[in-house]
Image (cartoon, rainbow, N blue to C red; front, side):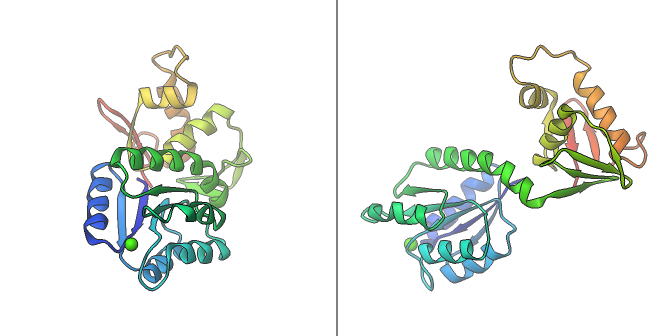
Length: 227
Ligand code: CA
């Protein structure tokens, strides 16, 4: 589940964004002050930050500049008010990934959020470098995998497959999601394709393949990678 931080001092806007983002399935943290927001961003626990420009304690621009100077790469979407449009360019130069001018439509905001998260998935994996899933250590950036500390062979598709599950960890993904995203919508699937990949992965990550605890089956729906 993606975790989003909203930093905004207008309470109605802050709570409205929180409720709508939660409704869309995001985990949401909020802050109504620039400095508090800044310190939360430094903890680097969020997948995306929605950051208002005009804030008490520290402006959105300063927050952005500061966290970037400290090496934080979390995507930032700036919220500017009308009349601050001149500052958009400045915001992007300071390291924001996108901006929206108030008032904006919720639909547009959600679309931007999705686009930013899609773009940043690759980066976050490179940043995380090596991940640990059960018995396995996996480096998606250079397609290396260790199982119980021994190098193992995995096909490109297996990495992509695992990566898709990892990117959607703790969410249920359907067979169709996996087929569309790993093999592409043009692919004419064999009904066992996904099941076979799941079986192979379980042999690597699970301690007991008969009782999987990491890649679990959600009957009638699909699979879930628990982390
Ligand atoms: Ca404000």
